[in-house]
Length: 194
Length: 192
Image (cartoon, rainbow over all chains, first blue to last red):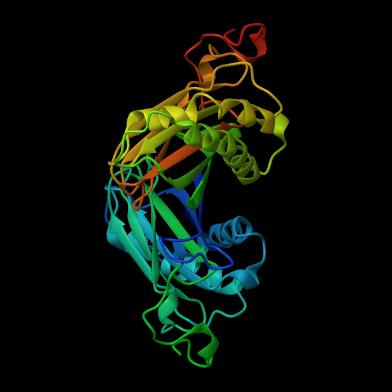
């Protein structure tokens, strides 16, 4: 069972007051937690990589808490989420895919209203590679105000044998959302979609 | 001051090259994206930005300290920088950073004898800003020479300025290039 070796963590918080339009009463907050870990499969093809998903569960829980803490400590304030991974160049995209289950369920375990799938993205890249992590509403994927994305990156990671794992949480939709569609107060909360 | 957004970054390095960093190296950056009141025009009197600098010294100092979640006494070093959008001039960054930002920043952490290292640039949205760092009481402490990088995809817009402050709880992750050590500080002149 490979050990999860964390080299560093980075927590990023944006507090957005306005974007040229009328400032809403509360700003939108967007938090990202990034953990840079050693890629136990870097450098060669390994057929059975699935056990590592289980190994990543505690780190996922820790990162979900980091996001919630960065947003003020109240999980019920979280309205949007997303996840991603940047795999160093000695690894493969499939190693990033290992994050889908532990990353997603870590957030859904921490957030009560989380019927919706956690949107995600991943890529292979060098240190400093930026990743646009997609964000949608935690309880209903079709909530149009909450379609968002947060750019993250770590200047010195991932090194070739590392993976940067990312979780993102937001407290509101886009700051001047005004293109219609399903709103959060219309969510039925039955299927994770509407 | 017209503030569009605040960004904080907290970085914790737990190991390097498989070697544990104990305690972990920690630093936090707080940045504000503000409107540049002088974008596109020459203004002789930059006092509005000078006053904004004072306000940001307090605001960003407190944001960075809160992001650390530590006591003011735990802060060992600092740095500051500004990135001016394309319709501004370098002097706008100077007005924000140099006359009045330092004193309120030092007040947040209970003092600091050394110059606050700084950098400035003009650039587009998405430009990289490296914030230089140094020990707060003695500029020559070699373990604390460092820099923290910021990149905001959507800022500065042409009429904006990004102002950043960094507070360090430690020096570099595994310092070992000699020089003045933190425990050797005399603390008389801000240098040694």
